[in-house]
Image 1: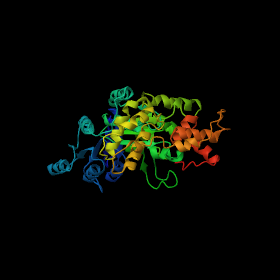
Image 2 (image 1 turned 90 degrees about the vertical axis):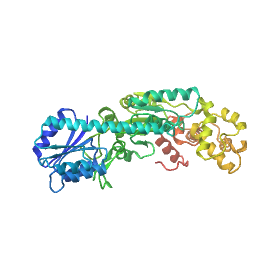
Image 3 (image 1 turned 30 degrees about the vertical axis):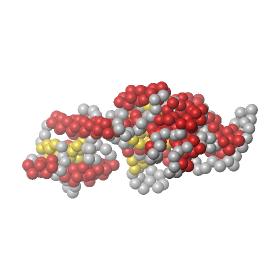
Image 4 (image 1 turned 135 degrees about the vertical axis):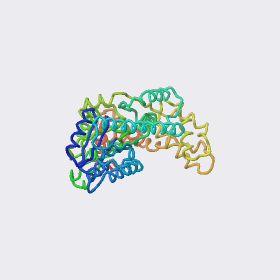
Length: 448
């Protein structure tokens, strides 16, 4: 199926062409003139534009120029009742793919459109292939040789070409986004964009318009039409991180996208087809969210086409030296590894903050060592020891309402300060965590 824009100032011809192409299963939009067409090509995405040459005041050459500027991947076919050689040559030299003269056979037009659409699709696949080859030497890496890491790489290689929805699960700091980027880089969509959005970092009232876009005047401050991330990621991959924090309205619209591949911008009745692969990530069990009514069960099963579990660092201890060397290299450090004397301590550590905690440790050691050699003293593993020694004793009664302050403090300690991970340990949402901390007069920081 191709997305086709037909541009002609003869309404009957637009209707006939739309009918012929729609009968073949294509998604067809009509424009009554060049000016309307230019507004559509800057706002939407088409595979093929079929435009009359002679129109007033905006002619087909202006439409061709607008398409080349805003949608260089789109094929343009020129229609004209004036079979002038000069006009045909000019159009082809300026980037038109084909040139048809009126009167024409409708089958001829359908064939030209489908040939152009196939050429566009092939060009996209070639770019994706080139991007994948280029990324083999420097793209996102799943680093390590531990069995759990090898299994993750095997599953990534299996699901990457399938274009299926993937639910990436794992504790905070394990590298879920790294896995998502690696999956995108190994897919046929590697030539398209990769866009990640953290559903917990955007206020619920703004997340819907961020994902789906909005129409001018849809709400206060909506001064112009704006496309959302689903449209911005066309031809590529969209990662919905911390999907469990999305509100009910967003969940309902996400379910529709996954079922029908269509969206409506906020305040806009127009349905838009989206061509995007959806990945979702979560650091807490969504099954628990389904039980407490905060997450839709039907959406969960739509996301769970292919589950991908990213192992915690404690299950891939053998990868620590390789990961540390990788982080040191990124910091421009001459040493290829942390001191051997530090490795026993690193292996014995529980790593509640996972790979993110290790990355912070390496960066801290790099800063402390300065221009000198890295030593064991620079590898400060337990920087929270002082805070832990002063932490209140855990109550035997684990009722959150009665012991909220102590439980939150302990959960934050175990999570290395991550409020998201601490909330998951306590079985509450991140927003509920912020609310309780503010109610107790604890420093919650800004709730994004």
